[in-house]
Length: 399
Image (cartoon, rainbow, N blue to C red; front, side, top):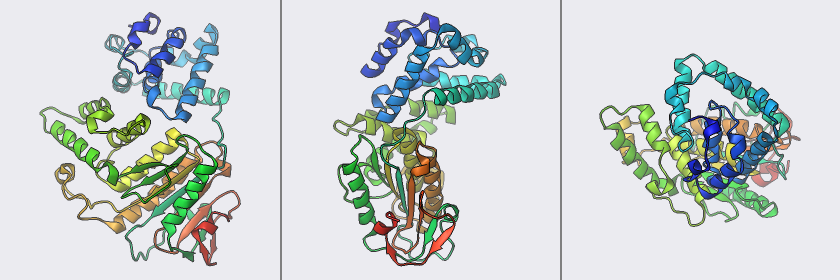
Protein backbone atom coordinates (compact mmCIF):
# COMPACT_ATOMS: atom_id res chain seq x y z
CA UNK A 1 0.00 0.00 0.00
CA UNK A 2 1.17 3.51 -0.83
CA UNK A 3 0.25 6.75 1.01
CA UNK A 4 -2.41 7.89 -1.52
CA UNK A 5 -4.37 4.74 -0.64
CA UNK A 6 -4.58 5.53 3.08
CA UNK A 7 -8.09 5.07 4.49
CA UNK A 8 -9.58 6.22 7.82
CA UNK A 9 -10.09 2.63 9.00
CA UNK A 10 -6.33 2.08 8.96
CA UNK A 11 -6.07 4.29 12.04
CA UNK A 12 -8.79 2.43 13.95
CA UNK A 13 -6.31 1.00 16.48
CA UNK A 14 -4.56 4.29 17.22
CA UNK A 15 -5.12 5.77 20.71
CA UNK A 16 -7.95 8.35 20.78
CA UNK A 17 -5.97 11.59 20.40
CA UNK A 18 -3.58 10.08 17.86
CA UNK A 19 -6.49 8.76 15.81
CA UNK A 20 -8.17 12.16 15.91
CA UNK A 21 -5.01 13.89 14.69
CA UNK A 22 -4.42 11.33 11.93
CA UNK A 23 -7.96 11.66 10.56
CA UNK A 24 -7.84 15.46 10.74
CA UNK A 25 -4.66 15.42 8.62
CA UNK A 26 -5.46 12.46 6.38
CA UNK A 27 -5.35 14.37 3.09
CA UNK A 28 -1.92 15.75 4.01
CA UNK A 29 -0.59 12.33 5.01
CA UNK A 30 -1.70 10.94 1.65
CA UNK A 31 0.59 13.41 -0.14
CA UNK A 32 3.80 12.38 1.65
CA UNK A 33 6.33 9.87 0.25
CA UNK A 34 6.48 6.42 1.83
CA UNK A 35 10.15 6.89 2.68
CA UNK A 36 9.11 9.69 5.05
CA UNK A 37 5.53 9.10 6.20
CA UNK A 38 6.03 6.14 8.59
CA UNK A 39 8.60 8.15 10.54
CA UNK A 40 5.96 10.82 11.08
CA UNK A 41 3.33 8.21 11.99
CA UNK A 42 5.74 6.66 14.49
CA UNK A 43 5.58 9.96 16.37
CA UNK A 44 1.87 10.44 15.78
CA UNK A 45 0.81 7.01 17.07
CA UNK A 46 2.29 7.91 20.49
CA UNK A 47 0.57 11.31 20.57
CA UNK A 48 -1.55 10.43 23.62
CA UNK A 49 1.58 9.60 25.64
CA UNK A 50 3.75 12.56 24.64
CA UNK A 51 4.72 15.50 26.82
CA UNK A 52 3.13 18.91 26.15
CA UNK A 53 6.29 20.19 24.45
CA UNK A 54 6.28 17.21 22.07
CA UNK A 55 2.60 17.64 21.25
CA UNK A 56 3.08 21.31 20.45
CA UNK A 57 6.01 20.54 18.17
CA UNK A 58 4.09 17.79 16.35
CA UNK A 59 1.00 20.00 16.01
CA UNK A 60 3.12 22.75 14.48
CA UNK A 61 4.79 20.30 12.09
CA UNK A 62 1.41 18.99 10.91
CA UNK A 63 0.09 22.54 10.54
CA UNK A 64 3.10 23.40 8.38
CA UNK A 65 2.58 20.33 6.21
CA UNK A 66 -1.09 21.25 5.81
CA UNK A 67 -0.11 24.73 4.65
CA UNK A 68 2.10 23.50 1.81
CA UNK A 69 0.71 23.58 -1.71
CA UNK A 70 1.14 20.60 -4.00
CA UNK A 71 4.22 22.13 -5.63
CA UNK A 72 5.67 23.11 -2.24
CA UNK A 73 5.15 19.57 -0.95
CA UNK A 74 6.99 18.19 -3.97
CA UNK A 75 9.83 20.64 -3.32
CA UNK A 76 10.10 19.79 0.39
CA UNK A 77 10.06 16.02 -0.20
CA UNK A 78 11.82 15.65 -3.53
CA UNK A 79 14.86 13.99 -1.95
CA UNK A 80 12.69 11.55 0.02
CA UNK A 81 10.70 10.70 -3.13
CA UNK A 82 13.92 9.64 -4.86
CA UNK A 83 14.59 6.91 -2.27
CA UNK A 84 14.05 3.49 -3.87
CA UNK A 85 11.93 1.13 -1.77
CA UNK A 86 11.36 -2.58 -2.21
CA UNK A 87 7.94 -4.17 -2.84
CA UNK A 88 8.34 -5.95 0.51
CA UNK A 89 8.49 -2.62 2.31
CA UNK A 90 5.53 -1.25 0.38
CA UNK A 91 3.47 -4.31 1.35
CA UNK A 92 4.13 -3.98 5.08
CA UNK A 93 1.37 -2.74 7.36
CA UNK A 94 3.24 0.49 7.90
CA UNK A 95 0.23 2.56 8.95
CA UNK A 96 -0.53 0.24 11.87
CA UNK A 97 3.09 -0.53 12.78
CA UNK A 98 5.21 2.47 11.72
CA UNK A 99 8.05 1.73 14.16
CA UNK A 100 8.57 -1.73 12.69
CA UNK A 101 8.56 -0.24 9.19
CA UNK A 102 11.22 2.30 10.16
CA UNK A 103 13.44 -0.53 11.47
CA UNK A 104 13.06 -2.43 8.20
CA UNK A 105 13.65 0.76 6.25
CA UNK A 106 16.97 1.32 8.05
CA UNK A 107 18.18 -2.14 7.05
CA UNK A 108 17.00 -1.58 3.47
CA UNK A 109 18.79 1.77 3.20
CA UNK A 110 21.98 0.22 4.48
CA UNK A 111 21.80 -2.75 2.12
CA UNK A 112 21.05 -0.56 -0.92
CA UNK A 113 23.66 2.12 -0.11
CA UNK A 114 21.02 4.83 0.28
CA UNK A 115 21.64 5.65 3.93
CA UNK A 116 23.66 8.79 3.21
CA UNK A 117 21.01 10.00 0.77
CA UNK A 118 18.27 9.47 3.33
CA UNK A 119 20.27 11.15 6.09
CA UNK A 120 20.89 14.18 3.89
CA UNK A 121 17.18 14.40 3.07
CA UNK A 122 16.22 14.16 6.75
CA UNK A 123 18.77 16.79 7.76
CA UNK A 124 17.54 19.18 5.08
CA UNK A 125 13.91 18.66 6.13
CA UNK A 126 14.69 19.26 9.81
CA UNK A 127 16.56 22.47 8.99
CA UNK A 128 13.69 23.80 6.87
CA UNK A 129 11.18 22.91 9.57
CA UNK A 130 13.21 24.70 12.27
CA UNK A 131 13.33 27.80 10.08
CA UNK A 132 9.57 27.82 9.49
CA UNK A 133 8.61 26.62 12.99
CA UNK A 134 11.36 27.73 15.39
CA UNK A 135 11.48 26.05 18.82
CA UNK A 136 9.66 27.87 21.61
CA UNK A 137 11.77 29.61 24.25
CA UNK A 138 11.07 28.71 27.90
CA UNK A 139 8.98 31.05 30.07
CA UNK A 140 11.86 31.25 32.56
CA UNK A 141 15.61 30.63 31.96
CA UNK A 142 16.36 26.93 32.30
CA UNK A 143 18.20 25.59 35.31
CA UNK A 144 20.03 22.27 35.26
CA UNK A 145 21.56 20.70 38.37
CA UNK A 146 23.66 17.54 38.62
CA UNK A 147 24.69 16.02 41.95
CA UNK A 148 27.43 13.40 41.65
CA UNK A 149 29.72 11.31 43.84
CA UNK A 150 27.35 9.92 46.48
CA UNK A 151 29.24 7.60 48.82
CA UNK A 152 32.73 8.77 47.77
CA UNK A 153 34.74 9.95 50.78
CA UNK A 154 38.03 10.78 49.05
CA UNK A 155 38.89 11.33 45.40
CA UNK A 156 42.38 12.76 44.70
CA UNK A 157 41.92 13.26 40.95
CA UNK A 158 40.68 16.51 39.38
CA UNK A 159 36.92 16.61 38.92
CA UNK A 160 34.63 18.49 36.52
CA UNK A 161 37.42 18.74 33.96
CA UNK A 162 34.96 18.91 31.05
CA UNK A 163 32.79 21.57 32.67
CA UNK A 164 35.35 23.87 34.32
CA UNK A 165 36.31 25.70 31.10
CA UNK A 166 32.69 26.79 30.64
CA UNK A 167 32.07 28.31 34.07
CA UNK A 168 33.44 29.02 37.55
CA UNK A 169 34.90 26.32 39.79
CA UNK A 170 34.16 26.75 43.51
CA UNK A 171 36.42 24.93 45.96
CA UNK A 172 34.93 25.99 49.32
CA UNK A 173 31.25 25.15 49.10
CA UNK A 174 29.46 24.35 52.37
CA UNK A 175 28.05 20.85 51.74
CA UNK A 176 25.69 20.81 54.73
CA UNK A 177 22.16 19.66 53.87
CA UNK A 178 23.11 20.18 50.23
CA UNK A 179 20.65 17.93 48.42
CA UNK A 180 17.70 19.24 50.43
CA UNK A 181 18.75 22.81 49.65
CA UNK A 182 18.75 22.03 45.96
CA UNK A 183 15.39 20.27 46.15
CA UNK A 184 13.96 23.33 47.87
CA UNK A 185 15.29 25.55 45.10
CA UNK A 186 13.76 23.48 42.29
CA UNK A 187 10.48 23.17 44.22
CA UNK A 188 10.29 26.95 44.56
CA UNK A 189 10.81 27.32 40.82
CA UNK A 190 8.13 24.70 40.12
CA UNK A 191 5.58 26.53 42.27
CA UNK A 192 6.52 29.96 40.93
CA UNK A 193 6.36 28.83 37.30
CA UNK A 194 3.87 25.92 37.22
CA UNK A 195 3.92 23.84 34.05
CA UNK A 196 2.97 20.25 33.37
CA UNK A 197 6.19 18.20 33.29
CA UNK A 198 8.14 21.45 33.44
CA UNK A 199 10.22 20.73 36.56
CA UNK A 200 11.96 17.37 37.09
CA UNK A 201 13.83 15.45 39.77
CA UNK A 202 15.62 12.30 38.56
CA UNK A 203 17.32 10.11 41.18
CA UNK A 204 19.67 7.23 40.45
CA UNK A 205 18.97 5.71 43.86
CA UNK A 206 16.29 6.16 46.47
CA UNK A 207 14.44 9.42 45.96
CA UNK A 208 14.63 12.00 48.74
CA UNK A 209 11.44 13.60 50.04
CA UNK A 210 10.46 16.27 47.55
CA UNK A 211 7.64 18.62 46.65
CA UNK A 212 4.85 16.98 44.60
CA UNK A 213 5.11 19.85 42.12
CA UNK A 214 8.17 18.03 40.72
CA UNK A 215 7.98 15.24 38.16
CA UNK A 216 10.03 12.48 39.77
CA UNK A 217 11.73 9.42 38.29
CA UNK A 218 13.65 7.08 40.61
CA UNK A 219 15.84 4.10 39.77
CA UNK A 220 15.10 2.33 43.05
CA UNK A 221 11.37 2.89 42.75
CA UNK A 222 11.47 1.05 39.43
CA UNK A 223 13.15 -2.05 40.90
CA UNK A 224 10.10 -4.35 40.40
CA UNK A 225 9.74 -3.14 36.80
CA UNK A 226 13.43 -3.63 36.07
CA UNK A 227 13.37 -7.14 37.55
CA UNK A 228 10.41 -8.13 35.38
CA UNK A 229 12.00 -6.62 32.28
CA UNK A 230 15.31 -8.42 32.89
CA UNK A 231 13.41 -11.66 33.28
CA UNK A 232 11.72 -11.10 29.91
CA UNK A 233 15.05 -10.22 28.27
CA UNK A 234 16.74 -13.31 29.72
CA UNK A 235 13.91 -15.54 28.50
CA UNK A 236 14.15 -14.14 25.00
CA UNK A 237 17.92 -14.33 24.60
CA UNK A 238 17.84 -17.99 25.64
CA UNK A 239 15.59 -18.79 22.69
CA UNK A 240 17.39 -20.36 19.67
CA UNK A 241 17.97 -17.89 16.87
CA UNK A 242 17.24 -14.80 18.92
CA UNK A 243 19.48 -11.91 17.90
CA UNK A 244 19.77 -8.27 18.98
CA UNK A 245 17.50 -7.00 16.19
CA UNK A 246 14.73 -9.42 17.12
CA UNK A 247 15.09 -8.57 20.80
CA UNK A 248 14.91 -4.86 20.08
CA UNK A 249 11.74 -5.38 18.03
CA UNK A 250 10.14 -7.33 20.87
CA UNK A 251 11.04 -4.67 23.42
CA UNK A 252 9.56 -1.99 21.15
CA UNK A 253 6.21 -3.79 21.28
CA UNK A 254 5.96 -3.77 25.08
CA UNK A 255 3.38 -1.62 26.81
CA UNK A 256 3.57 -0.23 30.36
CA UNK A 257 1.06 -2.77 31.66
CA UNK A 258 3.34 -5.57 30.44
CA UNK A 259 5.93 -4.42 32.98
CA UNK A 260 3.60 -3.74 35.90
CA UNK A 261 3.35 0.03 35.54
CA UNK A 262 0.22 1.66 36.82
CA UNK A 263 0.65 5.25 38.00
CA UNK A 264 -2.94 6.42 38.50
CA UNK A 265 -3.66 9.16 36.02
CA UNK A 266 -0.09 9.45 34.69
CA UNK A 267 0.16 7.25 31.64
CA UNK A 268 2.56 9.76 30.05
CA UNK A 269 5.16 9.25 32.78
CA UNK A 270 4.66 5.46 32.66
CA UNK A 271 5.39 5.44 28.93
CA UNK A 272 8.44 7.66 29.45
CA UNK A 273 9.92 5.38 32.11
CA UNK A 274 9.17 2.28 30.05
CA UNK A 275 10.96 3.72 27.03
CA UNK A 276 13.98 4.69 29.15
CA UNK A 277 14.22 1.07 30.28
CA UNK A 278 13.50 -0.60 26.93
CA UNK A 279 15.34 1.72 24.55
CA UNK A 280 18.42 2.54 26.62
CA UNK A 281 21.42 0.19 26.67
CA UNK A 282 22.23 -0.73 30.27
CA UNK A 283 19.49 1.38 31.84
CA UNK A 284 18.00 -1.79 33.33
CA UNK A 285 21.24 -2.70 35.14
CA UNK A 286 23.39 0.35 35.91
CA UNK A 287 21.90 3.23 37.88
CA UNK A 288 24.33 5.77 36.42
CA UNK A 289 23.37 4.75 32.88
CA UNK A 290 19.69 4.94 33.79
CA UNK A 291 20.11 8.41 35.31
CA UNK A 292 22.06 9.79 32.38
CA UNK A 293 19.62 8.36 29.82
CA UNK A 294 16.56 9.54 31.75
CA UNK A 295 18.01 13.06 31.95
CA UNK A 296 18.82 13.03 28.25
CA UNK A 297 15.33 11.92 27.30
CA UNK A 298 13.63 14.34 29.69
CA UNK A 299 15.55 17.24 28.14
CA UNK A 300 14.97 16.06 24.59
CA UNK A 301 11.29 15.28 25.00
CA UNK A 302 9.78 17.26 27.89
CA UNK A 303 12.21 20.21 27.56
CA UNK A 304 11.84 21.10 31.26
CA UNK A 305 12.59 24.51 32.70
CA UNK A 306 14.17 22.86 35.75
CA UNK A 307 16.01 19.55 35.99
CA UNK A 308 17.75 18.15 39.09
CA UNK A 309 19.67 14.94 38.43
CA UNK A 310 21.05 13.01 41.42
CA UNK A 311 23.52 10.25 40.52
CA UNK A 312 23.89 7.33 42.94
CA UNK A 313 26.39 4.44 43.05
CA UNK A 314 25.90 1.69 40.48
CA UNK A 315 26.74 -1.99 40.81
CA UNK A 316 30.16 -3.22 39.78
CA UNK A 317 30.71 -4.73 36.36
CA UNK A 318 29.97 -8.47 36.42
CA UNK A 319 29.46 -11.27 33.90
CA UNK A 320 26.47 -10.47 31.67
CA UNK A 321 24.43 -13.49 32.77
CA UNK A 322 24.80 -12.49 36.40
CA UNK A 323 23.78 -8.90 35.70
CA UNK A 324 20.78 -10.02 33.66
CA UNK A 325 19.68 -12.24 36.52
CA UNK A 326 19.04 -9.14 38.62
CA UNK A 327 20.45 -10.85 41.72
CA UNK A 328 22.59 -8.96 44.23
CA UNK A 329 22.37 -5.75 42.21
CA UNK A 330 22.61 -3.60 45.31
CA UNK A 331 25.13 -5.59 47.33
CA UNK A 332 28.36 -4.73 45.51
CA UNK A 333 28.49 -1.06 44.59
CA UNK A 334 31.28 0.89 42.92
CA UNK A 335 31.23 4.49 44.24
CA UNK A 336 34.49 5.57 42.57
CA UNK A 337 33.55 4.16 39.18
CA UNK A 338 30.12 5.70 39.58
CA UNK A 339 31.68 9.11 40.25
CA UNK A 340 33.64 8.87 37.01
CA UNK A 341 30.46 7.88 35.15
CA UNK A 342 28.45 10.67 36.75
CA UNK A 343 31.10 13.31 36.06
CA UNK A 344 30.77 12.56 32.36
CA UNK A 345 26.99 12.22 32.70
CA UNK A 346 26.79 15.73 34.17
CA UNK A 347 28.75 17.05 31.19
CA UNK A 348 26.34 15.35 28.77
CA UNK A 349 23.37 16.80 30.66
CA UNK A 350 24.80 20.28 30.22
CA UNK A 351 25.40 19.65 26.51
CA UNK A 352 21.81 18.42 26.06
CA UNK A 353 20.47 21.46 27.92
CA UNK A 354 22.49 23.70 25.59
CA UNK A 355 20.71 22.20 22.59
CA UNK A 356 17.37 23.62 23.74
CA UNK A 357 15.89 27.03 22.96
CA UNK A 358 17.09 29.77 25.28
CA UNK A 359 20.46 28.10 25.91
CA UNK A 360 22.26 31.44 26.09
CA UNK A 361 20.24 32.35 29.21
CA UNK A 362 20.30 28.95 30.92
CA UNK A 363 22.30 28.03 34.04
CA UNK A 364 23.87 24.79 35.19
CA UNK A 365 25.27 23.63 38.52
CA UNK A 366 27.22 20.45 39.22
CA UNK A 367 28.16 19.57 42.80
CA UNK A 368 30.35 16.84 44.29
CA UNK A 369 27.94 15.55 46.94
CA UNK A 370 29.19 15.84 50.51
CA UNK A 371 32.22 17.85 49.38
CA UNK A 372 33.10 21.48 48.81
CA UNK A 373 33.56 21.34 45.05
CA UNK A 374 31.10 22.67 42.47
CA UNK A 375 30.97 24.34 39.06
CA UNK A 376 28.43 26.96 38.01
CA UNK A 377 27.81 27.84 34.36
CA UNK A 378 25.55 30.74 33.43
CA UNK A 379 25.24 33.95 31.43
CA UNK A 380 26.77 36.06 34.21
CA UNK A 381 29.36 33.53 35.40
CA UNK A 382 32.97 34.02 34.22
CA UNK A 383 34.31 31.16 32.14
CA UNK A 384 37.37 29.15 33.16
CA UNK A 385 37.75 30.87 36.53
CA UNK A 386 38.09 29.63 40.12
CA UNK A 387 36.73 30.96 43.40
CA UNK A 388 38.07 30.10 46.86
CA UNK A 389 35.42 32.12 48.72
CA UNK A 390 33.31 30.27 51.27
CA UNK A 391 29.77 29.89 49.91
CA UNK A 392 26.73 27.63 50.21
CA UNK A 393 24.78 25.95 47.43
CA UNK A 394 21.83 28.31 47.58
CA UNK A 395 24.14 31.29 47.15
CA UNK A 396 25.82 29.62 44.19
CA UNK A 397 22.61 29.80 42.20
CA UNK A 398 22.29 33.49 43.00
CA UNK A 399 25.74 34.26 41.61
